[in-house]
Length: 131
Ligand code: ATP
Ligand code: MG
Image 1 (cartoon, protein in one colour):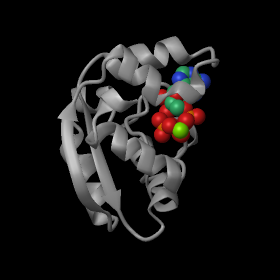
Image 2: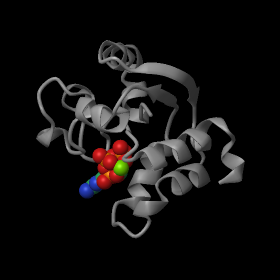
Image 3: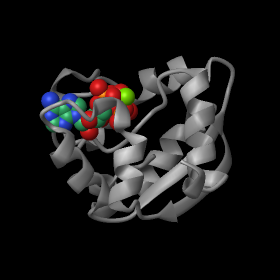
């Protein structure tokens, strides 16, 4: 996902450029907005964390871009491309270093395993109502 902060700031094009230049194939993509329930479901793993309310508020405040990407070793390579969760810790040239504002508003989401990538792809493209 390209998160609301990066969409608001007009970074969709630049981020997609970097994704393409890094060898990912975009196999599905849409601009959409998460409802409160969508965001709570998507980030359910973090529901006990102190920042959960803030995270849901942020993720629902404007449109996001949801995309499914294909590449050998995609999960690991995408997380390398986006950089650390906190942009202050992200390597030079990573998407979060270039476009993220803070640990909360950090421009992009990447799946953390092949299994979750499949679940998250279905969430966005097979219909959130099943979740
Ligand atoms: P994502 O899952 O969005 O790709 P991530 O895997 O790098 O990010 P997670 O630990 O899964 O990081 O956290 C999910 C999201 O929750 C972060 O991307 C960020 O938006 C938010 N978040 C994480 N830690 C904090 C924090 N300490 N304060 C505020 N928001 C946070
Ligand atoms: Mg995560």
